[in-house]
Amino acid sequence: MKKIEKRTVTCLALTLFLLLGLALFLVRFLLDGGDWASFAANRHLYNSQGQLSVGRVLDRDGDVLSWVDESGQRCYYSNATVRKATLHAVGDPNGAIGTGALVAFADQLSGYNLLTGADNPFGQGNDLYLTLDARLNYIAYQALNGRKGTVGVYNYKTGEILCMVSAPSFDPAAPPEIQDGDPRYEGVYLNRFLSSTFTPGSVFKTVTLTAALEQLPDLFQRTFTCTGSTVVGGETITCPFAHGEMDINDAFASSCNGVFAQLADELGAETIAQYAKQAGLLDRYSVSGISTAAGSVALEGATSAQLGWAGVGQYHDLVNPCALMVWMGGVANGGKAAVPYLVLKTEGGFPLPASHITRRTGRLIQADTAQVLADMMSQNVVLTYGADRFPNMDLCAKSGTAEVGGGKQPSSWFTGFLRDQDFPYAFAVVVEEGGSGAGAAGNVAAQVLDALVNGY
Ligand SMILES: [Zn+2]
Image (cartoon, rainbow, N blue to C red):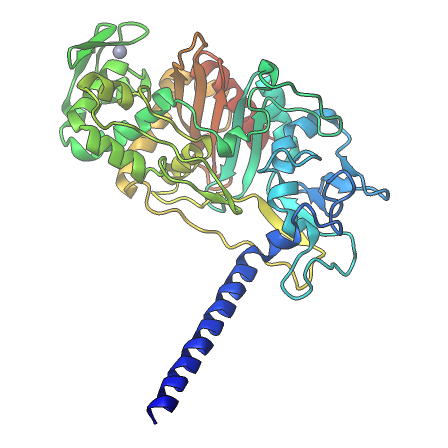
């Protein structure tokens, strides 16, 4: 009897083991099947040069950005500037840009599905529609005017990314020979919007201000005096000029480093880090499955002065432009924003294409704080940036001029959102070595927003 019992137990254990293995395979098959099928060595889907030889990439209004001709060659849109402006979204023929659709969405382009594998009934792959408007990308790329940087705009209610440009770029229809270390092509294979982090400079004051609004009950009763430099923790924090006497509204509108460094020091490292985290600036987002770069604030062991600089977006602060854009969307949308996405739909597949389900972020900011912050960002436009530069827009914004060191000119930032049910857009713009944030990046934002709101 004992023997039979023992054998039964062994048999059960083996059965369990087999079932576990099968379950593991099924889970991996469901999660990774698309990647297996669209693996670059699959000759069924890739031509002799290793280019994805099935599927078309289109923008939101059906402009065909990339397709495959009869000989299996990958082709791109007729206008060279559009090709450069959409390079990082579409991808290059050699697959060097890993976040481009030709690589990141290869399974959706190939028409892979669980029932038929990579065999598409039409043999042509799928039509993959991006959420982008190629025309907006064109306008943003032109506005960057040869400078490095990135522009992103999205609908904070639906999550659709309408504009996503990264520069430098190149023409995917005639990829250049790029030597290592060529400064013209620094980081060219990187989508700066999704995959880079930058020193934020004063756009980070939106975070320090949020913490101050919630943690310092007498904030609006305080007055501050700036003589052009302020001593925090025994070190001097400088402003471009003396801002004079002001309340917190003026301090934010004139972006006084002295005031925000003092506030950061008073709030403490833990609080600043906690609010940066809550704002979503330290986390990664999954944008149609592409993971964004995580930002950071390294405040462990920081002195008062270092904390002060961190509070104005310097020191070791790093921010990803996409995460900053979503943070702005959160402020605009009462505390929670839609998570951005890039794939509007795929057509031609079997079974029927699935429609996108909008996901929301966690709470990035309390609703009443968001209201106050939005009002103050609206004041910035009126008092500092010039409302006439942004016609027909209820714009809330913050500029940043981030010192990056290394003998480089500052990075220019402009970020914010429209308070408008018809145009619920948040944006982030970086112009590397652009100098003044409100100037260089502000002008790029103005051109893109103008096209969105007032038509092109
Ligand atoms: Zn100042």
